[in-house]
Length: 144
Image (cartoon, rainbow, N blue to C red; front, side, top):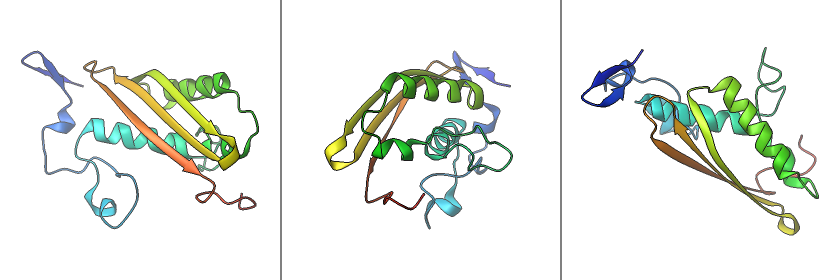
């Protein structure tokens, strides 16, 4: 439940700056122990997790995940289907944000995928975006 501070809506979880809300990405020696300090940071981490997870990979959540890894080696990926999948996953698993735009760029000859996802927070209407870049060196063929 949010309360109003002036004209801005603030999550109660953001009040105590000494509390870690969740896990920060990428998981490395710094973020493993740092974590996220605000609700917006955690929502961004949740979105990255959703995009990078393959459907069926998460225990007891077989439909969770977009599966961007599999798009890297497709000849002619359907951008409209990808947009619909990302939007439906966000609506179901992260309903506190609204998808604004998905910009996808494939370089099929070099097996590269660049994706920019813009979204807004339903709590206060502020906007944010993430950019993910993949290439075949991250996901070699034959490894799943």
